Image (tube, rainbow, N blue to C red; front, side):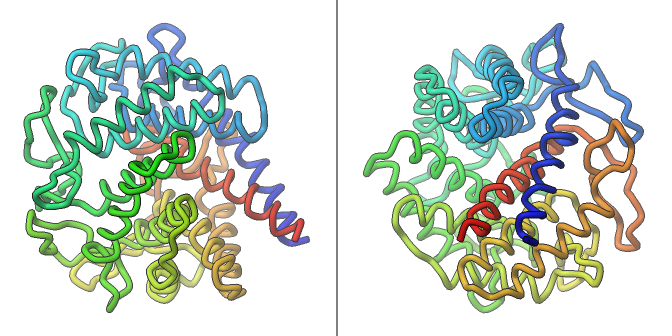
Length: 392
């Protein structure tokens, strides 16, 4: 009964708060959605529109339509698909731009493999939800970019940032102060995208790419001693800085498991190790999950997406191990979300973050990095996983 209540709560949150908020941001004049909403819920109608945000929206509404069959979700997904293919896809050089301005004209024309991965993820899900063959063709085009231009056979790594014509540039978009040549984050979302693509276009070649990337996580990115992922690396795979990102670790735990299930592989030590380390080091007294440690110092900021991924990751670890403690952790973080992350304002969505003292930070409600993907996917995962639990 507890799982049934949680499932219903997640569906209500998704369908009555999260998705309606994002539907309300539709830009009826220029297409896509308005790219920025500040902490006071003021919409900036002239903000740039990022590929990551747009593709996350496309994935979320495609997945929601596939699950619920609501035609308003299909219409939103179809509109965003037209915007992404018509404005963000670079028909001359391939791939997607980093951003366009509010009218849809190119703004930042750099290409980042991270953004390409989200385009592949979104096109794959849109095809899965609608059967649109054009979307599958688009997905294949981006797959070829990611695994061709985006992959460096000399290092065995997926590259990061390029200019419009695919000349390599310093990784200012995801490399932080290190300008890291290799990031765990890009590799994680390439894995996510390849998994989604294999679900709609299975082949030995795609499965081989997933297998190779899982090997990279096991051999290069996962530190088995601290049971955490290395975040920033140089071209020789040497770690830059001392960062332990709990949100990425717990997200990787279940995404790696999902990739394994897709191709019939298994990496239990890494999947459970990442979840267990997050449980031991990051869960705070109120059920929230801390952001990260840097040089051993805990950053107890409670970021919205970290909480969302923690619930899914702990539920997955419970399913994996049968250990009820993981289920209790998932419930505790969900309870924290409902009391402290969900925006109590009638027209709000989720707060960006609370500081270590649990005070809301005055950050955007929607933006280049703040969309309906983490919390929307969390709710969909809860509905699917807890429905299965209730039937068992």
